[in-house]
Image (cartoon, one colour):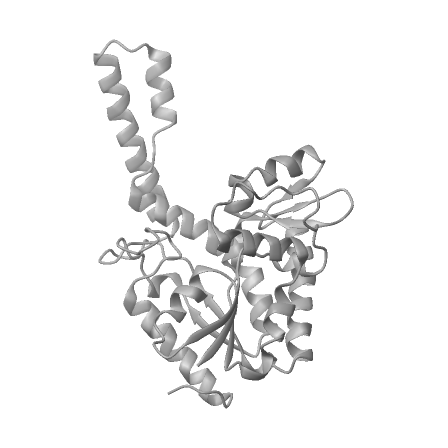
Length: 293
């Protein structure tokens, strides 16, 4: 099965659970807005990126070549996988209207800092401005896939972020459950403030510790997943309406793999989740006439 990916770890990690799969093209670190208004590489210093893969992905984003890289292999593709994970960090909008995806690589090599100095604004994911420009860019992606005759082979991996690690219950997000989590944090903060007072800390310092109590790891995962899944709703709904097929999983159906090779994250799932997603992909590929043993 020959696959092209426009997305990130959700699609790439899933593909690794398809033994016969060959990822022909991997377009990562790209917001779809770069397909319409790429900033270009002139004046952007990527020398601090030590990975050839990272340089290649960021350069592709800056040049807006994501669609071209996929469609040049259109004739041999059995599936095009799309996910929206790379949109979460937003993009830089320059005064001239060009854009650059705010990837981790762009931040680490200083390109984001230089963008800000050049007058660029960070358009944050979830804002109306981001959604409007993302929608236009996603339309461009779909139009390119249709023109190349591979839209019918396109599958959106619409997988919500997991709110709990493997073996734990999915967090309840009703008002009572949220109140319970807040109460437990308050209790931890109160205990920490009390310990500080016994050690001679002043009232102000104890009060500060009460206000800044950190969530537990489980609470952090639950909060991040809840927030991200809410922000993604309109993006996912729009993407689903425009793609030929989609594989959907809600947060309660997936879990975080604490031993994931890239580390535990709400979008790094357990093996059983990937296997389930693969089964759905195979079904869609067969329906679309592709090669799916």
